[in-house]
Image (cartoon, rainbow, N blue to C red; front, top):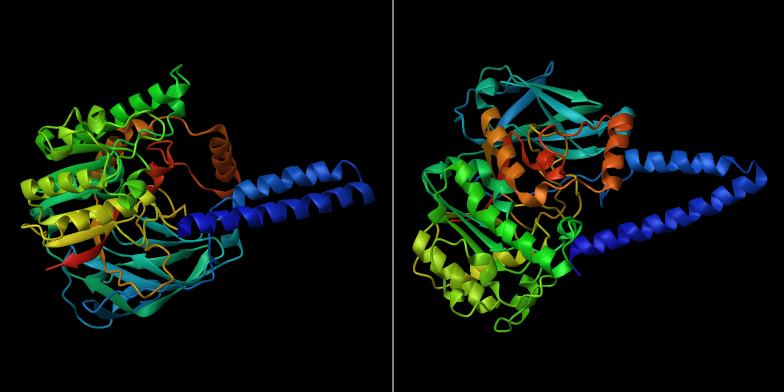
Length: 470
């Protein structure tokens, strides 16, 4: 069981215990006070839960984030004076440097019910980076793309439902412009490349998109059209295979650089455990991956037998790496992103690189999911991305951030809108919860799309982590 599953299991157990205690108290109130009072309290308690306690937050908001940023960080002395962030000495900062500021954030009492945030003023538009309700600890604000206002003394920080105190050092990293190199994005599922790196690959001089699985499971939307479970899974996989080839064309990536490997969703761990053993789809009644590879621009090793094995996956990846010769490889981060297919996707690529004639210059990691905070990145679509919660400093996490303009964010939103898996309506329960949070907790839904990924992924930053560089 993964750490994410363990945290979720513990969270659900605690909720069941709390619900049981609450029911006992309501019964006592009904007996001792009035029969109708438990009904009223139950409704109010449910509304309070949906508005303020429904987030999957598996740590205390009072915990300090704990990062090891590595040895190549530049630390610049800064101070907060009358709300302005000022450098203590004259510095040279490039416009594209990654800038991260440590901030002690303490929520006000209102910030226990409305999302506390730090407003960053001085750039082209207001940025508002949000944190956990009830936050009281060290957090990291993302100021990438704001070197100009900072150097000009025009950058202002303002707490919203919180008090802030900056750390004395601003952390800065200067990197090559990865957009001027050959980029290959590894996507475990169709839409992972767009969620994590649309801005990067759409601006790259040369880009490749390699999607590992068809993402055919959980096809209830298509079953509602009258299809049986297997037929619905197959058509969902075909649609997502099409998406993985077609949507990157919106960003100018040639069709010849978009590849769908067609392995089966959530079966990569089983394939890895027995590398020569074929692992069939969970829902599509398929044991041949070639149905989902029909849109590929050229043949690959596994096309010979269509067997969903780990060895075939490695052979496909080696062929692609030698053909594309990427200088920058972008893939899921092995410790930040807990999705089992994402973990195995990273492991497969790194294993395929072993002993290969071509090696990338840079490997970047991304996280489309987290272990302990399902709402991250917190805040609204269009806002900056503050660093995620990390409480284990044994792993070096060295960030690289790509700022996105408003136009680039809209293009990214349109790319996500073309993805079939992000188009169906949310379940009624989630829509009701969102409405309650809008009314009681001032969480405004994204205007870009209903799916939660429109809020989380369409931001003024894309955030990556340097995994390897030579």
